[in-house]
Image (cartoon, rainbow, N blue to C red; front, side):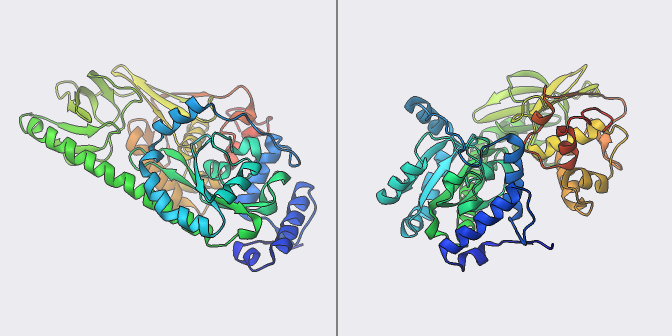
Length: 432
C-alpha cells in the first residue's frame, strides 16, 4: 500500500473536527503497526518513534512538578533569551492575541520561563499545563511544540492528534529553537499555542521568522561587544611583537596582530590567566581583558602534537571531547551532530568517506554537502587530530570512546543509523 504524508495546508483546509479525526486515525494506525494510506509528517513520525522507544504512555503521559519560584527567577535571569524578550513580544504577542494563542518561551530543558497572551487563553493554557515553571520536555509529555524542537533542533508544528499523548489532542502549537550566535549553543525555544480550532499553516513560518529576528538582535549585541573590546585591545596589540589576538569570552576575535584574521578561537570551557595550550595555536599566554582575553602565541616553543582524544558520550545531553598531550589539555562540549560524527570516526579508525558518513548519519549517501560542511566546522576546532580524504582521526592519536552504561542512552535522541544500531544492543561494540 502506498502511503502519502500529510501536510499542514491540507489540514488547515479541513474542518477542525475532521482534521482531528484524520490525525487520530493516522496516529492509531502508526502506534499499532497497522498499514495506512496516510502517514504522519516526517518530524512527527521521528518524534513518535522516539516516544515508543522511550516508553512514553500515549494515553496518559506524565507531569513533573513546577519549578519553585526562586529557581524560575534564577533561570530567567541566566537565560540569554531574557535579552530578546522585547523582540519576541513585538513580533508575536499581538498576533497571538488575535489568533487566540499564547506565546511561551522555554529553556533548553523545556521549562516554561515566560508566557504571554490574553487572559482568556492563558486560563485555557492553565488547564492544559502551560503554566510558568512547567516541564514540556519531550521525554516527559510526548511530541509537542516545545520539547520536540529542542530535540530535532528544527522548527516543528504539532496539531491535535500529532501530539503523542492523547491528553494534548485539543491543542495546536508551533515552536522554533533559538540558537545563540555568539557560541552556537541552543538556548531555548519559542512556541505559539492555542485551542485546536485556531490552527493556521502560516503559524510556524511566523514563529521561525521572529526567532531569527531574536538571533539577529543577539548578533548585533555581540558586534557591539566586539567593538568595545577592539577599542581596548588595539593599543595593546600595537605594542606587541609576534602573533597575538584579542578575543571575547566566546573566542570571537576583536583584533589580531602578526597573523591573518582568524575565525572563532576554540577556548576551554573554563579559562584563567597564564599559559594555556590551544589546538589551533599551540602554547599561548592568556591575560584577561575587559570583556575578553589577550592571547599571545608562544613563538619560542614549537607546538607539541596532541597524543590523546577522549570522546565522552556517557552524559546524554552534554557530549564532550577532550584533546590532550605533553603541552596540556583542552575540552569542548559538542553539538549532537558533531557528537554523532566523532562517534562514527571513533568506531572506524581507518576513516570514512563523505558518502559513507552521509549514510551513517542520515541514511542517505547523497547528503555529502551537509557532511562536508559539518566536518569543516569540526576541523576548525580539532584540526590537529582530524584528517580528511577520508575523514578520520590521525594515526598517532589514541582515541578513547566513553559510552553510557546502557546502549539506549548513547545520544538517545539521535536518528543516525550508526547510533540507532548501537541502541539495539547486540551490535554494542567497536566492530559494528
